[in-house]
Length: 428
Picture (cartoon, rainbow, N blue to C red):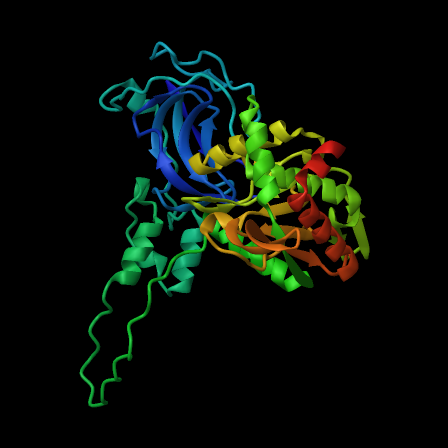
C-alpha cells in the first residue's frame, strides 16, 4: 500500500518568490531517496538543486523545463509506502534512505543520500491500485503564472485541453494557443487594414539573473542621487609590486585583490562611504564591516559575489576568496547568500578592454569604484615624458551620504595607493 505526497517548491530564502525550472533530475517512475535532488532551478540569484523530503516512487511532475514556478506550487508527487509517516524511502535500491528527512527544507537544499534511479512500472500491480493522483478540478491549472499569461493574451483557459498530468494546463499549452492563427473572419466589404510596416522584434524575457539585475539597476537610478568623479593614475608601480610578490613564492596575488585591499584601506579612512540610506527613518547607516562585492561576468550575465569581512583578510586571503567566488560564479554554483549583503562594490570593467565608465551603484550601497584597463600611455614621470602603465579610476557615490570633498578624498587616496603601493603595503 502507498500514499501519495505532494512536494511543492520550498521557500528558497533571501526574499525569493519563485524560480525557473532548468532541468529535471528525475522522471515519472523513478525511485527517489529522502533528500535526493529532484530538480535544478534558477532563482534570481543562483542555480539551486532542490531535494525532496520524501522517499518513494515519483508519480507525477509539474512544470516543463523553462517554466516559472512560484513558491508553494507543486513540483512532484511521490508514492510513499503506507505507514512511512516520516517520509522514509522504500527499500528498492541499495542506496535508498530508510529514514525521513531530518532537515527543514528552507534555503538551498538539504544534504542527504542520493539513490540510484531505476524505473518502476506502475501497472499492473498493487502499487498502482494504491497510488492516488491529484484530483482534477473543473479547471486544472496549477500555476498562477499560467493564469497570468492567459489573461495577458486573452486566452480562455476553459477552451484549452491541458497536456500535463491529469489534463493539467501548462504554460506551453497557453503559448500554443497564442501562436495559433485566429479563425477566419466572415466576408466583409470593408477594406482590410494595411499591414504593419515592420514585423515585431524578438521578445526576450527579463527573468532569472538578468531580470534581477534589471530590477536592481532601475531601482538604483530611481532612488539614488548619484554623482561620478574620475582620475587617471600611474599603475606601473602597482604591477611591479604584484610581480615582486608573486615571484617571492606562495599564493599568487591578483591585481583585483590588490585593488580590493586598497578599497578596504580607503574605506577605513572614509567610513561614511561604507553605508546605506534609510529614507523612511531619515538616517544614514554606517556599517562596521566591509562586505566587498566585485563584478563578475558569466554566461548567465553579470553577477556580484561578495567577500564578507574583507577588511579583516590578508592580501593572499583576498586573492584566494576572490578566485574561489569567481569560479563558483562561472559554474553557477554560488548560493544566494554569496550574492547579497554587500556594502561596497569594486567593478573592474577594464577586463573588457575599455578605459572608463560611469558605474551604477549597486542598491542599497552608497558607492562603487570602477577600474578601467591598465594600458601603456605617455605620462610625465619625474619631470620627464615616459611610457607608463596608466589606468582610469571612476568613483560613483550617493550624494546623500557625502559631498564631493569626501568622494574626491576617497578617490585621490585610492589613486595614491595605486601609484605608490609600497606605501600602502608598509601600513598593513
